[in-house]
Length: 141
Image (cartoon, rainbow, N blue to C red; front, side):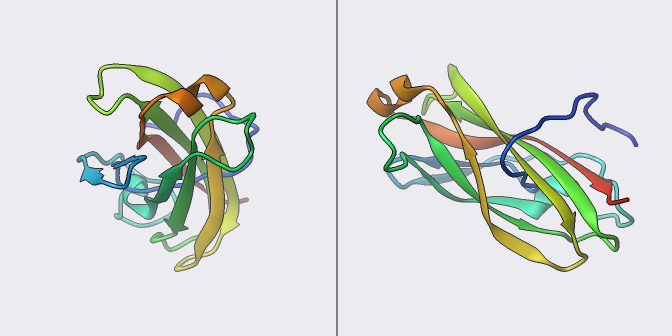
């Protein structure tokens, strides 16, 4: 299982794919990075995850929220554990992280109803970017 992270996270949703940072004010920056993937293809798991939106939710008690678009490019149904970092725009400070889990996403399927959320309401007063910090994809059982 190559670079599989040695932890399981029980969180709302997961996403996989290329590392993408989206500034809350609307700009987009891409950063490289890929990891070996599981699930029967040579397509890296990190390339399966895209950040569709990086913003503050309407809920005044939560911090930042990243809405994810995950497409399974492998040849098998796969499970994803995704960690999103909420960083300062210059990348020097990590304010928080949020996780997402997706189970049994079929080959070629896409899900767009996945969010990773920070529970730190202090982020509501800061400028931040959302960045895919890590993606683990494994074949579903």
